[in-house]
Image (cartoon, rainbow, N blue to C red; front, side, top):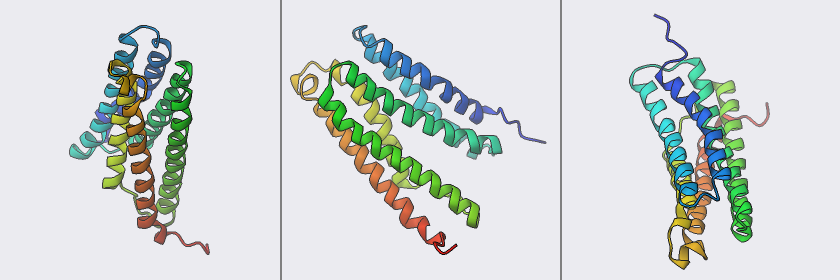
Length: 201
């Protein structure tokens, strides 16, 4: 029996794609709505992240892996990560947090370069040797750190202590963790799969 392209995992991936613009809109257009301007985008992002956690597990557990799923899942992941990072950067600038934004732009750059590098590596290795570049433990830790860090950055203004509202200690800490895990997960992929690439061909 042929597997349906629109099975549960693939439907979750499509929902993730659709939730990304909802998150961006909520973050940017609700920023002057008090507490709800922080809670709503955070909840939408958490829901988006849950679809990311569930689709792959369901696909593997129930043998629902399809060619469409192999295409839409990583596309939805990149869509979610890069769109949310850029949206948060704009959100910081709109709120007048210039210093915070100047630091965060480097985190966004690191994440962007890492995603481009690993995606290119996956394509080359899979095309040349047929090896599937699976997510490593560091890659999974990187994903979790980005998700948790994103939510923490969004809700930090709700904490009334000056160390959070004025000095953004939680945001800076999360940025450092995100950058650290992104760099080392990228290096881990390079170390594991670069030997499969022949530079002379």
